[in-house]
Each structure stands twice: as structure tokens, then as C-alpha cells.
Amino acid sequence: MRELSKLTVKEISNINSKSIRCHPIAFEQTTEDSFGIPNEEQLVSTPYQLFEVSANKYGRVHGFFIENVAYIVWLDPHHELYSKK
Image (cartoon, rainbow, N blue to C red; front, side, top):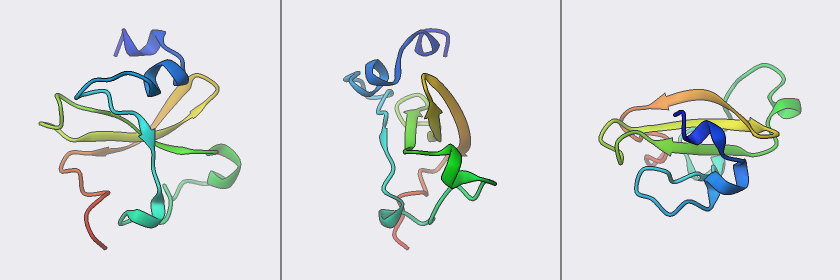
């Protein structure tokens, strides 16, 4: 976490690593329609899978960025967000 916190969104998104797979979430391809947080349409321009925990051994972390600050919304220990609806 300490090393990730030193990076910009662009730098995190361009890392080629099994555990750092930062990419936008396409909610239409997931089990959810949104994060379900108040004022989401004003806060979240792009939802992200921020990173995996131990190369998916412990799941994934989802959230969004405001400038270069990541806001974690969900911990997804079983990678269920992308399960079939």
C-alpha cells in the first residue's frame, strides 16, 4: 500500500503485474449496477478495480479515484463482482 500510494492513477493503470490490475469497471458486465453510495453520480467519474490482494488469493479491491486519491468502496474476497448475473 505504501508503494502504491506514491503513484498516480496513470502509473497504477499502466503497471504490468499479476496483483496490480487496475482497470475501469463496466457495471453492465457485473452483478451490480453501481457502488450504491450517496451522490455517486457526482463523486465517481470512473469506477475501478483498484488492485488484487496477493494475486487474487484474497480477492480484489474496488473503488474510484478523485484526482490521484483512491477511495476504496468494496472488498471483494471471492471476486464475485464479475460473476454472471
